[in-house]
Length: 100
Image (cartoon, rainbow, N blue to C red; front, side):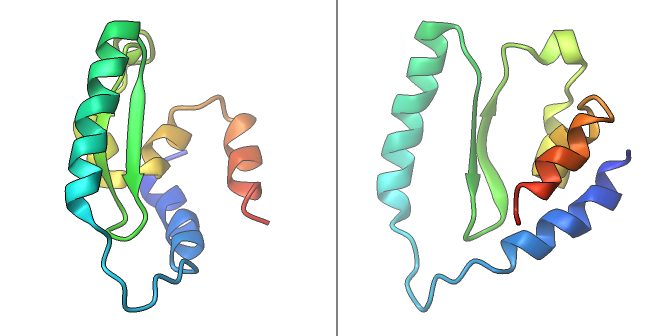
């Protein structure tokens, strides 16, 4: 399934987030990201942090990138829809249905 088709479904879920008039404290986020990225490096693991306010990835580090042919540029462009598009076809609808 193409990520652009999945994106509409995800955008529908994300549009339901209500942050009121409060803008997130991005200084705290920046400090946390640095720590999470270092932990991922030390632990040889993957990390993806998605900003629900801006509806975009803040950071993506994938240790599995070469195994699943993940394209981090495409992931940034399409957000979570990209990862769903590279899942097994039977798994994508299950992930999308978890919003209910």
